[in-house]
Amino acid sequence: MIKLPPVKKIILWLTAVLMLFSAIPAQAGDGRLVTQNWAGSAVFYDVPCDETESFHMTDDEFLCSRLSLENRLIYAYSAYLNSLDGDEREALVASQKAWIRCYYAYDEALKQLWLEPVKIYFGVTGQERRTNVYREAMLLLLINRITDLEEWSKGRLVRLDAGMAEQKAAELEEALTRLRVKMGLCLYVIQEEYRPRIMDAHRAYFDFFDANGAFLELISKGDRSALLGENLLQVDRIAYITGVHYQGCRFFRREREE
Image (tube, rainbow, N blue to C red):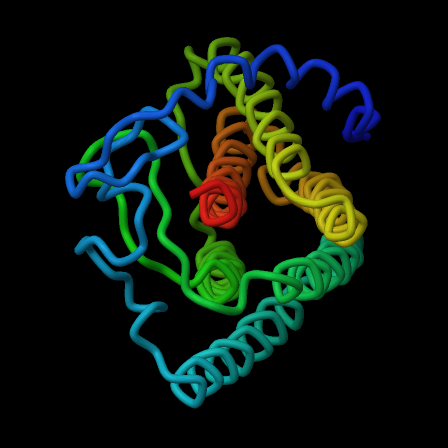
């Protein structure tokens, strides 16, 4: 079982890490002070930058997209489940239950503060953009799960070079460590009142990762490279969503510090 370390332990460790992000005032292009050493375009919401589809959506458009994806998910899951029997069928049911728990945990966590658009920045000039953290995360969770179910039903799994299994196993552990750090950063930079639901979402993800991993072990049928490839894909996806969430958390801190 993969478990998140105690939050207090993460926060103590992150205190040292976050010294890298010292709040040294820098001058923005229009003369405004920035509390981090970033370009003004990365900090100030009113400075022009790229905008994502989730930023442009109306509430009705988002709801329509979400409902459409949820219906597609139900169909993909039902069709795949009906093609399985025995242990594989039971494992898929357990995996899907864990995914649904994770999906709604993220819904509860992100709608606390991230229903409105924010500007996010990944530390590289030109990557700043306006987005909607809540919408982007919820739609991606659905799209990723649908893609998996549809691909697995066709017998298609991620394939890696069998000779690189040990290297990929190490990469998976490193990816999980980085994910935990990103999750810890989300907790570190946001007010305490929002943390319980965020922590619940993080725990729900790892419960899903374990349940899904058990299912993948069955359908990979001893192909370790396929199992590692699929698990790496799962971690990479949630790491991206977590990164967007973290950037959304930092946006609110920057707004308060300006």
